[in-house]
Length: 261
Image 1: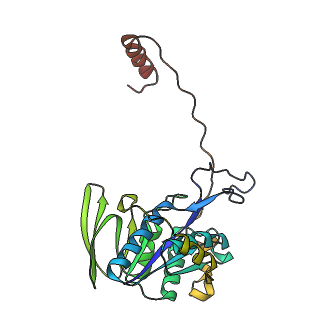
Image 2: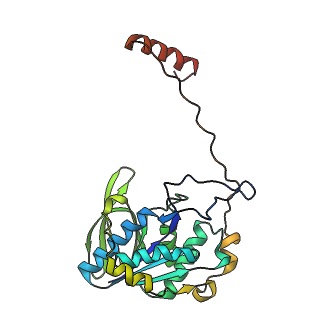
Image 3: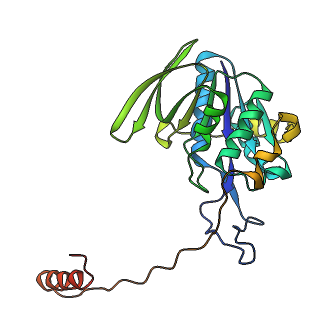
């Protein structure tokens, strides 16, 4: 079974984001980064499928040279191959353009039975790229997967989270899955594989190498962010004091004043 996992390097979620007032962009230089957590669940799922059914796992990322850190983490956890898509023309790509670029990269790398993505990246929380890749490739997809039930030579059955509960879905291979945190517990990297990953050469693919049209990506994406801003700080609340009956009466008065009730 040939498996590919898409991974993304994002700003560490322990660091409060800051905006550059001159450009309106999130400041990333000198900021700690991490692998988007749902991508680790996707990687663990891919590694388990390879262990159970044979084959190998490759990891793919789109970004600058620093994204090799994320790919090396993938290699240290058990992936066999890694690929980075990097090109100045890709800067400011929206989710559609990102999905388009990754689909082009996947097609140029090879043929895969299963492609796995995190359900969303934690920086923009769009949750569109995984589904977009499947659409661009014209393959089956199962989103929000929290259990992989069975995989055969020509199909995969998974349980997914749905608005009304859960669904069990069977899809023909090749298939793309977007993965929930509840799917598994990602394994730790081994020292031996970490050393191997740090020495491994990671090929860098630009738009020309994957056949991506630069007129469709980056600043030419179909959508753009018009404005970024920090939300206004919350005002401090009012502490009500007294016994239970007094607090209850006062709370009702306050809620009426605010037209909540």
